[in-house]
Amino acid sequence: MFYRRIFFCCRLFLLALGSSTLQGTESAYAVGHPDGRQVGKFPRSTLLRWSLGILPLFCFCGGLSAEPIRLIYWNWAPNIERVVEIWNKKNPDIQVTISRAAGPMEIVPKLIAADRAGTPPDITNVTYQDLPALVVNGLVSDITRAMEPNKSKISPVAWSLVNLGGAVWAAPQGTSPMMFYYREDLFKQFGLEVPSTWEDFAVVAKKLNAADSSRHLATFPTADPGLFVALTHQAGGNWWTLEGDTWTVSIASAANKRIAEFWGELIKTGAIATSQVWSPEWSASMAEGQLLGFISAVWAPPLIKNIAPATLGKWNAAPLPRWREGAGTKWASGVMGGSAATVTAKSKNKEAATKFILWITSDPEALEAYVRLANIWPAWLS
Image 1 (tube, rainbow, N blue to C red):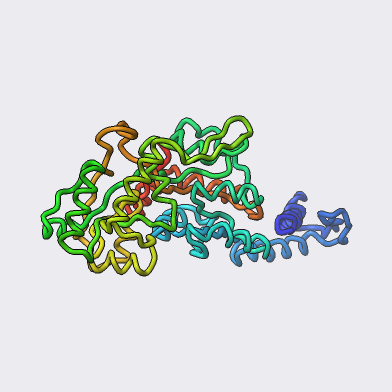
Image 2 (tube, one colour; image 1 turned 135 degrees about the horizontal axis):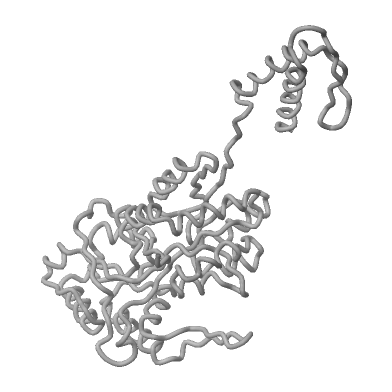
């Protein structure tokens, strides 16, 4: 409608100027409306006065300016607002607003609820393990056409995690190689060596707990399989395989048994804590120095800073311990977590949303900021 009004106004102006002169006889012109109706007959001088009066209204009263597309982006990463700010400054026509409506453990139920209520975001972060649930529930869009040209630029592992049923449902954002974080000051206090193998890890854990039974080298949550799965992955094991259309689930491999026996023995002797990571109990133990180490991934440092700000500068990082012999000796690390960005199925601005997720997952400036502010390990290779 806006452009039809502009057309109508310009037509008036051209009609007024179209005769041989603006002076002389007051010829009358029949003016047609864009929808085909005849508006009426007007003298040329009248048309000129109208057109010259109307055009400035469009030029100086905002008539030619359009409202930007506004996107809502669910993301739980620390400092993500500062990354998105880069986009907003460079793209005034597409503005993105961060919402922390859901964390990584809540994304599936909260997105289902928002979808049913008709209030989903345009874009959401999603962990790789939760993406299939979003796809099955019809909550995300197929972005294969936009992603396919970038396949060679993305880590093959990450690509496989967003490719389901022959379609691509998200743009890989980060992978999550694992690390061992430890309190350097307390290691020195208790005369501990940073373990480079899991065999050494068990020795250090028992030595620490024998010196002070209230302290532990790390926690192995017994109510959450996440760490168990990740460490099994490092040992070369898997919990499930897909053959044709058939899924096979098994934890009976040599790698799985090795992980279960190793940690089971440390738990039984009390050398390792069993508190749930991110729980109030665990957070307090991290802040108070009852836990000297944390087995996690590259994204952990900003979160450690948030839960234990008084310990800032006292932590260090080391490669994940490796197995000295037997299953898993050739693997340096496991993968724990990682996330992707996806466009929701009910977004009214899918094209703009797709443009944004390609930027935030692949643009060099965006990735530099994301790495610096949120400690991700980019999934894009180039």
